[in-house]
Image (tube, rainbow, N blue to C red; front, side, top):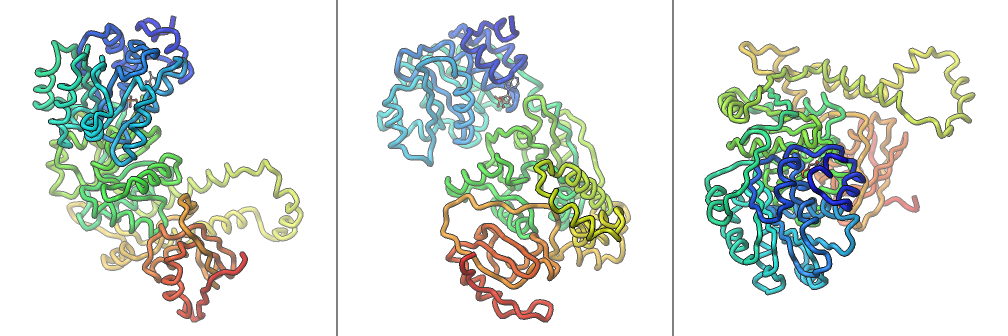
Length: 556
Ligand code: AMP
């Protein structure tokens, strides 16, 4: 008997769990599932995200409700659309072997008409954000009369977002509620009040300690001057070539500014904040999920509820004021037993605040040196060598060229060939970092070379990184192709070329599509309505004494 069977789950669910590859229940599943399967017991689960709480409530719901009754029997309320979709996604995979069971996500920002139509089709489980749910209740488009189970997920987030009245309204409008299950990462007094008012002697489970960050997360911090924050961020990114993470900023403006700067410097990143339309947000999230983006630069509100496996780093560009926000940010990494790093860039005056957070999350924070230019180069170099060794040549395309290569390089030793390959990838990068400033704050600041040389380099516009491909267009905007008589022979590689044309034309990276560089010329895909601005700003200008020609490409 599997450990999941021992919890009382039936064969259809065990089959789904096997298909998902879950071997052992997580602690919250172990404790909650047998209680929730009784169907009559209220529950308060103090659990961080990433502890497996969705299965802890999702599996019992599926076992308790009747798929033959085609009306809503279970309601899950959660703070964001993102989380709604994740929960539905999880439940979909848990219910794979239950015939006739339907689950629907209802959230703001999407067509309410469509959601109303779906609801009429006989849905047993509704996963909703509070605002949209109230809207549907007021339109009498949803019937909560027969709801037996209500789950409040990330309840503290919902209260932080001002949904307290809405939640109370929802609880008051589910008269046949047999049990209420509340999950929250923290237990502020308002949650205690809601639980006292609407729940009956709830069974309490705490996974980890209150406010305690996940033990799989390593907390690190770097101390730098406030005006070196951005450069420090860049250095951290360059020092971690395989990084896949979220950088948190305090404001939308910061998120946007940092994203724009990094984009200009050739990083695979994008911003996620509240000013984006739903469509833009979906696009960014999609690209991040499929890893065409290495980093999201996000505000706290916009990044709520993101559950993406494999996030290696959460970076606090600035410390949040509130320890709960710190805990939530960190909860994006170290999920489902994986390890993760939560690092903060702080200046001297913030060290006190950091200590406070350290005490409250009850985990040791490690101070690290901001890597110097040499460290970064070495790290990048190793990464490059790995990529070189792992390049797939099994398709045999290059076999036909072997004799040509041998002839061409007959006089050149292996070592020299390797150096030349490295030079192609690395020259600009090495130059950028060769005199890089020491960004650590020390008692006596010591920099390589002169202070002004260091600063000049730090703020120069040289690209940071090599080896990054550029993002492919996924939208369906109207694009056209431009020709320009600049290429690799002019000393450009893709990132520096991109930066050059964006700087010259004062356009943003997201107007561009694919860039195709050859030795002498390049072709640029660009949104049709930005093309003129680019041509106007670049065509006829000089580059290294040569006149640049840029025009609409024909037939390429
Ligand atoms: P949650 O806390 O519900 O957001 O779950 C975090 C992640 O852990 C999700 O991606 C789940 O698919 C995964 N997960 C949940 N339960 C288990 C389990 N028992 N074994 C392995 N992974 C799990």
